[in-house]
Amino acid sequence: MTRNQQITIFFVIASLTLIVKAAQIQLFDDKYEKLAQRNTLDQQTIYASRGIIYDRNNEVLVYNKPVYDIDVIYNQIDKGMDTTLFCQLLEIEKEVFIKNINKNWSSQKYHKSIPFTFLSKVKPEIIAKFQEHIYRFPGFLTNVRSIRSYPHQNAAHLLGYLGEVDQNMLNKNEGLYVGGDYVGKSGLEKSYEDILRGSKGVRHVITDNLGRVVESFNKGELDKQARPGTNINVSIDFELQKYGEYLMQGKRGSIIAIEPSTGEILCSISAPTYDPNTLNLDEDRGKAFDNLMQDNVNKPFLDRTVLAKYPPGSIFKPILSLIAFQEGITSPYKGVSCPGYYEYNTFRYNCHDHPYPSNVSIALTHSCNSYFFDMIRKTLEVNGYTKPGEGLTMLDNYLYKFGLGKELGIDNHIESGGFIPTANYYNRLYANEVNGWKSTYVMSIGIGQGELELTTIQMANLAAIIANRGKYYTPHLIRSLSDSSIEIDPKFKVVRDVGIDLEHFDPVIRGMENVISWGTGTKARVPGVRVAGKTGTSQNPFGEDHSVFFAFAPVDDPKIAIAVYVENAGFGSDYAAPIAGLMMEKYLKKEISERSKYKEEQVISIQLIEVPET
Image (cartoon, rainbow, N blue to C red; front, side, top):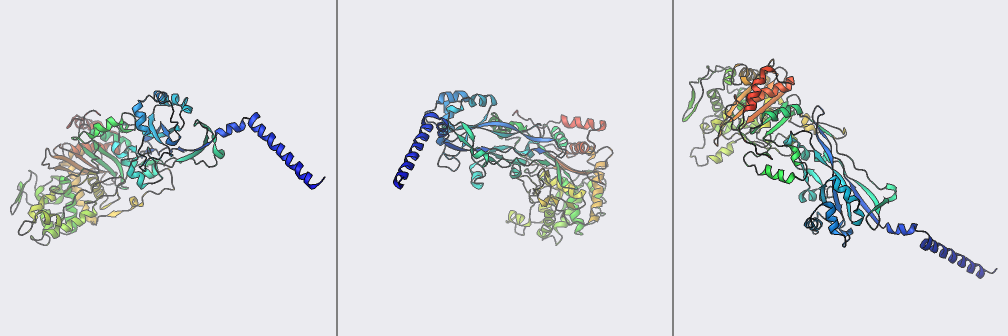
């Protein structure tokens, strides 16, 4: 056989083989017809479950529950789809369909080839019905993700809430979020967003021309599993938190309690509060949000523990004493005359009837204004009557060490630093005075009045500082993480020293203990426990005075430091002190004794405001 014949036979055999194979594919085997229909490779997002939040005793404060969304890829929509059936299945109006499907394609938030949320928070029974017909609607797919749910009606301000990511956050975190994602908007949810959110996964699937999933692409080798968020334990004692909110019903104000030895926040109560479940992204959230926002009198969204700034009143007196003793301006054992008022040049301020304040302990016990006006005057005039600014600057430098006049740095996404008036502030305020301002212009700061403003968290931290005899840890809410590879901010382990010698604390603490034993704070007593505290009545030019109190206990081994501020309630001894006493007893003894039950009933019966229904 010639070479040409061999070549001819080879081509004939090859041609016959191709013809037979083509016939098999086109006429006899539908396998490849089906494969031809599998013409789309989709990437489906797998949403991570958010980290669970527990209290210090492993009580669940926030957990996840599934919610169903319908996403859509605009470029894959069948323009001839049956929109009437689609809307009937999802129980929506045609106008909703039009609004949700048409987006601002020129913005960075939406893209026609990238899935976006068409409808969120769809009920499970509706999703089940829609799933049976989803093959009729190419481009649409269902997704399950988690939203937050709360087993209790407490701690709304400190926990925070979720909301849809905004354009600003999308721009700052390109690739991390897409439109429709939920992120922490306030409280712990926002502060620990990076830890709680976890990371999304992705599933690569082959879909047919009707949008139905046929199989995983490449046996799932390119898929990426979602990584759940890290669980966190916060320092809150839930039982104490719940009890504090119970006591603050019908009142405006705040309570903060701190563990002095660690700086861990034991409770953070802002009143009035709201049930966190009202903002858990269900269909009634918008109405509840509007109702809370429109209450301009009670401002339930305002976290008064860290944002409201108040004159501290007489609880400032122990702090001033420590600074004056450290600077040698006066002695703890020096007395001051008090005939019922304090008078100096043109300054005159009334005091109340009490025993002669022969030392700082007695002065604190009876909250003698004359004693502390004399102390602030000498502090301001340390370099002479005409130079009060120098004395004020020295005082302010100590106050900054006490964590005042600036943010403490707690792990809340937002915090006020309060206000400490400076010499420059008064220079501007009294710029028209020919000879400048004098000590008598500003002496009210000596009793915690005037321009001086603190937050409740700062007041509680002052109590912790005295409890620790001059040291403190930055107050914080985080306690532990389920992922040990993530480090808690090391600043929460740093011991801070306020620069006051140890010897100056004893007479001050003795006076604060007397306040509870037989002074103005007897209503803060805890049976069988030594308590040191100080009452305050903060003058309010716009209405009733505010009731203030701070304390720590036990005196010899402090476990809790606390500050209570009740707006427009009058004397600190009448309102803030009994609340603090009950809170300390609840934490230290886990229950309220029969001796204290009457006090509890009195506190609960006090209704200073009306809280509208949400």
